[in-house]
Image 1 (tube, rainbow, N blue to C red):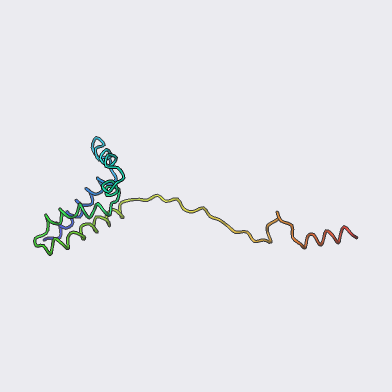
Image 2: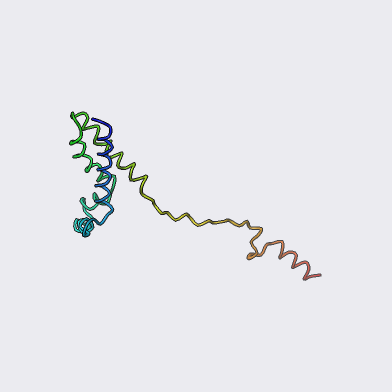
Length: 126
């Protein structure tokens, strides 16, 4: 097998898997399919890019491989290449954690300290 067939197969696996997991498709067909299958096994399979890429890569590996040994090795390789492409192209917008600063007890002016009470008691008695 030539290298460009592997590249084309990886791109095909990535595109079809991305289509099924995260796009609505033409006339919202794939969105309707995902809502129709529900949250059961098939629905969870359509929600997970990693899981679905394995099953999409299987027929592509069978079609591209010349021998059974090559087909067996192509199967996870195509899925892994599709996962790498997905990680490179998807921009996850995460919100950074809010900064939190600890104040020391010395700068906290809400609570009274024992030294202040002792000074007030001495000055009040004198």
